[in-house]
Image (cartoon, rainbow, N blue to C red):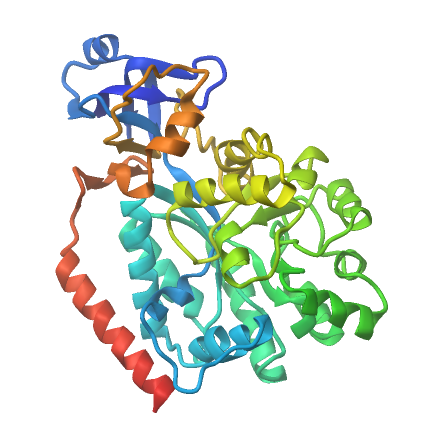
Length: 443
C-alpha cells in the first residue's frame, strides 16, 4: 500500500476535480482512495507515505503518437544531408536512420525514449516504429524495453513499400505477430495496432495484405496528409483524396488512429467523424518540418476524437500542450483559440484513445482507476482552484517539473531518481549505440 499525499491533487474527475491538500492511496495496480491527506492516512495507517511537499499530484500523462526509432538521432550529422522539402527530410534523415537500425539499436532507442518518458511524467505511449534494417522481432525488442522500464505501450510497425515488397510483407507480419502477442498479455501494459507509414508509400496490394493479416480487435495507426505531397500523390494515382482511399480500404473506424491530418477538407472530416476514427495532432513536428498547421480546432469542434502527440519531436507532453496552444492562436489570428480545446485533447481525449486499447480507467485519479500518478514540484504563486488548473499547468509547469512518476502502481522515479535503474550505465550503452548508428550511416 502506498499513499501519495500533502499535495494539490488535480484528479481530472469532474465530480471532485481539485483537492487543495489531498492524497491518493494505491494498492497493487489501482487507486483505492482519493481525498484529504489526513483522512486517507487515517484510513491506511500502515501504508508507505510519499510526501508531495505541497506540489501538484495528477494523473500520468499519455502520448498518443511517438517515434522511438528517432531516439538516437539527437546531434546526428549525416554526410550530404541538405533537405529542400518534407520528402527530402523523410528520405535523407528518417528513412536513412531506420534503414540502419537493427534490433539492438531499436532496443537502445526504446530505453532512451522510456527514460525520457519517465522523467517527463508520461506513463502511456502509442509508438509508431520503423527499422527497415531489421524488421522481424523489432516490436518485441521495444516490448522488452517497455516491460523493463514500466511504461504502458501500444506498438505498431509502419508498413511501407518504399524498400520493396519483401520488406513490406515482413512489416505486415511483424504487426500481426506483435498484436497476437499483446492480446495474449495479461498485464494490461502492452497493446498492438496495424501500423502503416502513409498512403503514398503503400500500394493497393500491400493494403490488401495488411487487411488480410490484421487480427480482430486491432485498428490501424497511419500518417495522414502530413505533407501536401501525400495528398498530391493520392489525387494523381487514385483520383481521390486520402481519407476517401482509407475509407475504401475499410481502414477508418473507432480503433484507428490518424496522425497529423494537415491537408484534409470538410468532406474528409465528415468521414472521420461518421466512422468514429481517432486523430492525433503533433504541433511541434508539423512546425519543425514546415508541413503546415492542421485544422485541429475545426476537427475538435466537429466532435472528432482528437488527441495530442509529439511525433518523437519531444517526450514532454506539457511542452506539446504549450506549443499547440500558441500555434492555433497564431494560425487562426484568434487569441481566444485553443484555450479549452488543447487541454481537452491532452487530458481527456488522450485517455479516451488509450482506453480503446487498454482495460480499465486511465487519465484520472479516482477509486478503481489505474495507478498512473505523477507529482510535480510546482508551488503556485497565485490562487489555485478547480477553475484555473489548466492555466497553472500551461504557464507554470514543464515535463521536467515532474519529480515522481508512478505507472501501474510501480514507482519508476522518486524525487527525480530513477528507481532500480543505473542511469549512467544505461546512458553509456545508449551513447555507444548512437555512435554505432552514426558510423553505419556515414560509412
